[in-house]
Length: 297
Image (cartoon, one colour):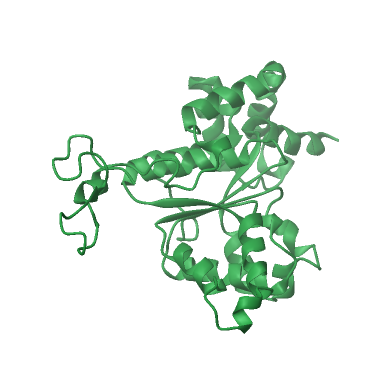
């Protein structure tokens, strides 16, 4: 925990120590003015330097070889929009494509950035975004090494700096294992001190922002799925912002009969997940080009 460097009470330590050792250590009021650091946010070492500036630079470099090919297809997308609706049928997301092409005329990189990522960035840095279903829930999906966790970490850092509120980056895989361990901890049968499922989950319920990384990597134990579902239910009820990352979109879970969340048979949970704001780790133009090409075949 850090305080302001010029604070006369804690001298930057964030804690105020009373000369009387019997009195408790107090959190200094100046800590409210200091954005949480990477350690406080729970960011793993790999993501502690994550921010949007570094992410955009990394992403642009990773996509550099395919930029020209993507931009060459812009006229095809413009031609698609110019055709009568009866020729192309209903184009889902037409308004988003119109906005994308308008933004791309000003700055070409808008078409290269991940689909939906600029909306996430705007929300994290300014708080501006119109959520379709009210709850501030984001779903970032893409394959391994696509940058989804780095992007989530950048959003967490930016949001915390913008609001001055706490947040936490949590590995679902690690949390699942910790929950599973409580069921097999012999101390629970001896009435000795041990960490319960409630001890693990309750601190996450009230966090102003929670990132649940690798949501699709939860353990197959249905008790773990129930605990995580309860966590999301609470955050939904309290309208607390939440970011989930996964390797696939939420609809893909519906098709996995053995997925622990499917076995819970909680239709309302899946409805909320499907209603999340999406970020897909592919260039925005690529998404639309992939949709355009099947129409031409």
